Image (cartoon, rainbow, N blue to C red; front, side, top):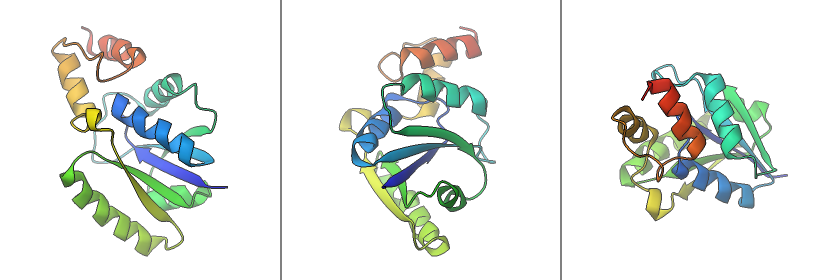
Length: 159
């Protein structure tokens, strides 16, 4: 069984993330969305809120598991018996940082492979920070994130 972990903070989940999730669900027997509690990031949404939003936006995929983790990604992947770490690439600058992480992860866990999926061209500019910024100015984010995220941001930001 091919099990892949797709890690991220997903604060909040966007159409770019969902594109990667949809494509991964077709490539792997099981995809585990690992929602990180990254110590350097200060997320707008709690871990439970992020998991709930992802769950609401991915109901149609039957081979997904959503779980939070802290600590090393390779330890999480091992715990979940995943042999693959899946990373989405938006732009060239993503590749440099992701390639470095992939090499480090390979040193830490030689049995786990990292696979990169290029984000669909229509989402290459998109990230969660942009979505939060636009929502913060009461802008229309309907082309960047699902309605559930739009509603959650309006409630969280109070606009």
